[in-house]
Amino acid sequence: MRIAIASDHAAIEMKAALREWLIEEGHEVADLGPDSHDSVDYPDFGYKLAAVVAEGTAERGIALCGSGIGISIAVNRNPAVRCALVSEPLSASLAREHNNANCLALGARLIGIEMARACVSAFLQTEFGGGRHQRRVDKLSNPSC
View 1: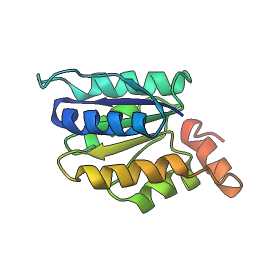
View 2 (view 1 turned 135 degrees about the vertical axis):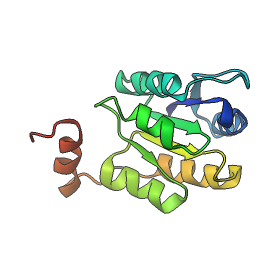
View 3 (view 1 turned 60 degrees about the vertical axis):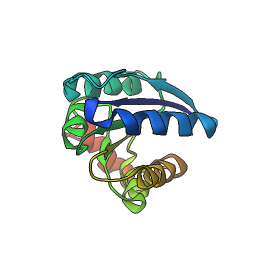
């Protein structure tokens, strides 16, 4: 699967660890930055991630910052993207199954790398349920539906 990953400076270590693990798992990973611990603004990287997912260059996106909150808000500004902030695997699965989330947000200061891997695994392995959920997902990007 083609996966894009981006973070702010607070999540640079988690981004690197997840990127390497995803590559080992056989995924194609686009690291959208940043490349150093220098302070950056999470919206810049959230917008970049959202654009790559919205245009279809990546099938899924992983957004990381200290809490996951700020970057998830930035990613969700793009109407073609549904980013779910999660901290455990069940929520990651439900985000895919019920909401057809195409991006996952994680807080690097709130969960460890093992939990992050578990969340990402659940997110990538779960398919969208469709059916009754589709009309609700349609309303997420078009409220007049």
